[in-house]
Image (cartoon, rainbow, N blue to C red):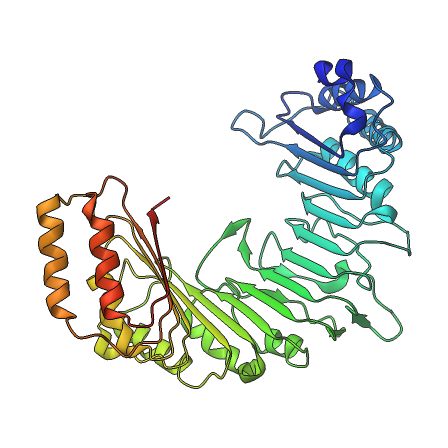
Length: 426
């Protein structure tokens, strides 16, 4: 920091990132940050402030010698910082520590900036908001903020993009300003919304229901186009929230049995649907086939994407039929026949992505040649597939001939193939 100050680079900077790990007394850390900022008056160019207080096994319990006095001091430091960094319009704060001094600091900082912010990423148990009725806020991420102790307060009218990640599965829309006479919240300009279910901060794949409190609020999203539901149980409350919205794109991650309830959102009006499920979702092979067949046989979308991790199941190609799919993404250690056996069961597929973590790992040049020769004989006749794009991701350290053999196999079996890309599993 001293080097930056001495060379004058600060006045040309637009973003400031402060990452600290609080030790025993957090007020000392806040004093240090203020002292660093006081060393220069060239901070007027800063538009983006990113502040992160890291958690370690050593700082779960932080102390204060004078609790009330330190709280007041933390608020004053936040006000001073807001005056020094006076042109900030994007604020990102990340803090998992439930410490009253740091909460007071971040809460005060958020209130000082609230009226001038365009974007806010609020990943802290502190409250955000103010009495300011005028706001420029258009993008908002609220993570861990919407719990029983601390409620954020945001004006919904100007928001264009929002991501909500409650700390627990309990959620209240009263974190947004609303007309108390009509009990109405209208997200007039919101076009992009992501709702993600957490269980005490941990993302779980079991579709834990988000308990939307019965607040008798009338909530509407008249401009919503893009909706993401991550690990969310599709309950009647969720359907009711979005049934009247002009949604064109839906992204769902979680259990297939929950994805089936998406049909109540009138999926035929969509331009894109993406459904992702993974190994954490315990499901039998038979149930997987039944539910996926039911989901992907009657949707009339331009783009339908199915992304699955199939480590815990063996998909028998003869048991599935997905005529609505246009994009298929498969992830596993090994994938039977590199998914070529599934191609006839997905007649409208145009894009295939295969990530096989261990494919080629233990192969020699000779064994690779033998493996692909067996596949070449099995798929000797070109298919009638419409696939035009293929991405294959294999293990690093595979034989040099592995990629050429895979390319020739796919090019032979997929007559309409235009592009094929091979890379290493990351």
